Length: 396
Ligand code: FEO
Image 1: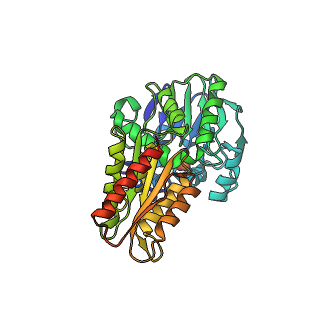
Image 2: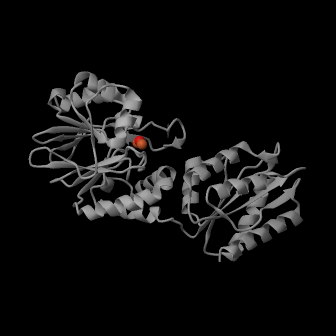
Image 3: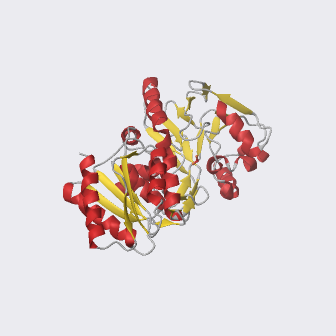
């Protein structure tokens, strides 16, 4: 299928509504996704990005319904990750001499993926190619979210093809932001930001500032995943600025793993203690095993502080908690406070290890962690409540 985005610009991508996870299973996608490819038919014909390789046959079959492939003058590869470049090998078999425009970093990433002698033409920010009365302007966007990431802007129609930036893993029969449930759309956009773009927030701020200085009017933002922003497209830019600025809400998130419910009961009492001091603060408690890892990252993204709990097992942390901590550390959240807690039997090393990882992830440990030996009794649980109160006070 294809549909008109604006004037001579069509969406020619692939919907993947059944996709349940992404990035090798690392990212949950319960609402599916789309791989957005765009066809521009001015005096020159341009294809912007392709689709993930499992869909390359369908992509080519559908594309041929819209355009004779030998009419394509240029291909733009805004980013080499396989979900956008995966159909290039099949496409280039049919039109091997068509130039592919990419960022300078894209030379290495496209070659590194496909090892072909395609006519790769590196461009830098401000470079243009004419399509007749309109032009494409290239804007390098390194680390949004790969070194090779690039935006392409179409003059006249004022469309920014932003690739992964401003995208969402969200499939719907309606492809435009004004046609879908707004809460779901913004949740998926935030989940995408929190899980993919958080480490690059400084670059996000810089890139948005740089783009604003170019003074290019913006009618549509056409990302490479999910809905196309045609109604108030700057709303997502404003959200990105908010999110990129060490975002936090009045929320404290407690996540824990537990074997025999001891650490779980500690978590509940700590939450009670915090809530008794902060009546209006959202205090949310989650079992790590029973919740989606990527949704937990959203909760942490929203929070001003996080508490992590694990019992000690084999002189360390539960593997489920260790995996979450690794994710938290990698995302490099900024300006957040943390604390730890956990039950133990005879050694109790988990707290120290969790604190170390959280510090490495940029969190400030504001209160020494609390432990409870064996099965926490009423006295131990009262201490947990007190710990929660003290933790809350350090945030005031
Ligand atoms: Fe949607 Fe970085 O690929």
